[in-house]
Image (cartoon, rainbow, N blue to C red; front, side, top):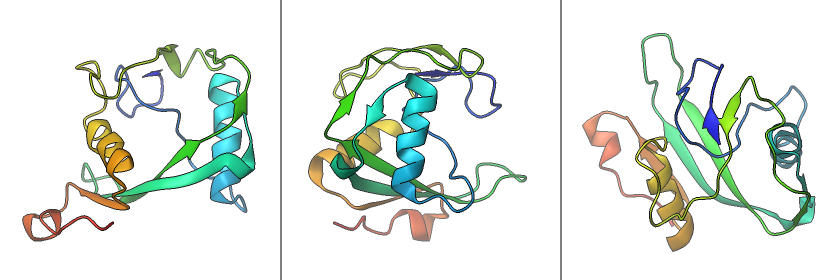
Length: 135
């Protein structure tokens, strides 16, 4: 989906994403975000944590983040843009041939999912950034 209206990487292609609401577990947040953003109903039992990206702050006013990436084995519905103020395009892309305007960390995330890497580090100082990823 092409991000828009959030102030974070607007105009770039990304996966559906969001923040957890207070008192919400990670799988509930995933299921809610998929329904809110692209109108699909994910089956909770088919959602599997695939990798975690721990990213350093990108700017002075930013914070570090833990990004949780899931695979969803079963869902119903036809994806469509449910939040046109936050998404201007929805498309399927080959993970091996992503468009040039995809969010920069997404190719590494998809490769980590494919090879079973559990943890990725991004934008940390050299000593931390060169630490091996964990499987």
